[in-house]
Length: 293
Image 1 (tube, rainbow, N blue to C red):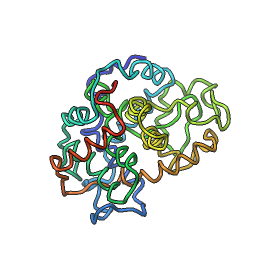
Image 2: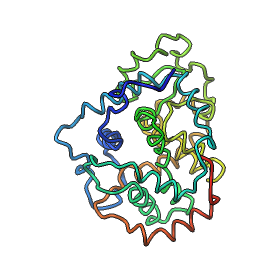
Image 3: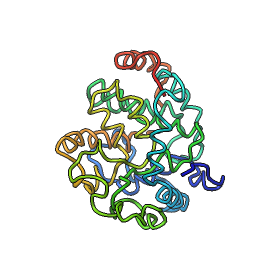
Image 4: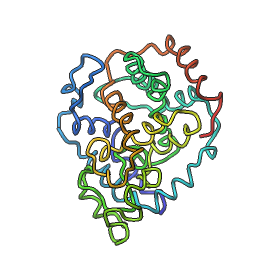
């Protein structure tokens, strides 16, 4: 399936952060608030549900097929794009300008630093802090011409029945895989409790960044990268029938990371120049100067 779409179908959101704010609306509960801004103050839009988010999920659920996911996994093998260091990748992502996020006027680098600084403040291991720094770097796919629905959004398995716990499940009726009987049983093309490493999730920045970082971060951090948008699993427990015991153990780390991802926004920008030496040292502890993207 080609990823070339009419121009109007490539931009269902006015900004990719609209998806993140919609997640905040759906999952406002947390035991952790990394700053004093009350969680009710997030997502300060005039309308509670934005039509652009709904349109985003219509496209996402329509086009994220087994064929599409397998195609993207072949297309975006690390090394096909360029060689780049982590901080260089952060500066590259910084060219993705977002003027419409109502919760922050931060640059992309400042947002990443805000997440990692909240994690560092709570005394987590250095690899955990670094995972917070790099977790959104896969969004550079937007800068490679990928449509938003193939970069962000809640992720979900393809090749098996869609859970009604996935946001806007009604739009899966538009997906060609709905007409494939093999894909519409509970386990689909997978075995019960086969483990998520054997399951194909919808394509996006999570899987891409996992592939880029898989040789460098501890497994706990890699689970955070790969599954932090898999809300139907780590918040709704909708795919326990595909997960094995190791997945369940590792998802403790995914759930620990989730509040930092959702609630680390603040009006106070981090001082990039002041923090850069610390983070360059942290990056060098785990990553070489250049890695394959």
